[in-house]
Length: 166
Image 1 (cartoon, rainbow, N blue to C red):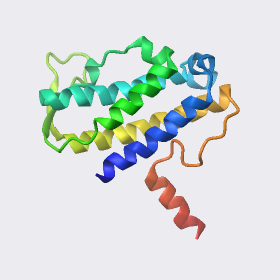
Image 2: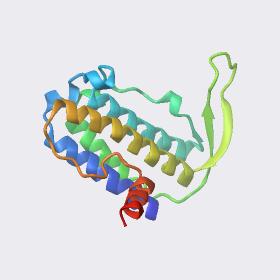
Image 3: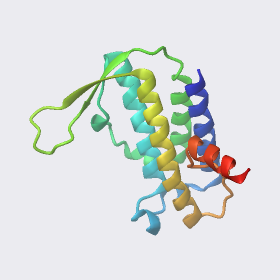
Image 4: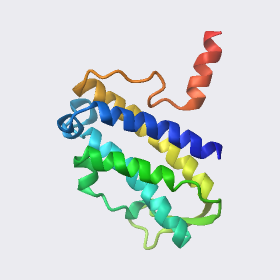
């Protein structure tokens, strides 16, 4: 599946960047990220995919019910392991799902929206790229590692830049 390959590409970039930084850098608050850490952004990415995988079996996805597991944001080795684990589980077939979300603090019950597995994988991929852009800002602040030019950049943006350069 082309979508699974795209997620793999992004996860490999993210895992490679984690392999190049220290545990201390992973948990260091970044001024440019409002004192959030690289680990917090990585945890967020992982937990959304975990919610999707759990929701696949249940037929209902609710990203608001993620665990917010501090171990993921404080242990870069665990985070790297989970990225690999998530990717290996993405080969599932498409199926209809319901997305539950509360977009209003005063809502009595969550809103239910029809969706499907592939659509949610695509959403999570775009969401991951967005967070990788933020992670790039954090990595630039706390490390001197070199990142690929397309780290945290949407593929559509990369295609557009290549067209403009011609």
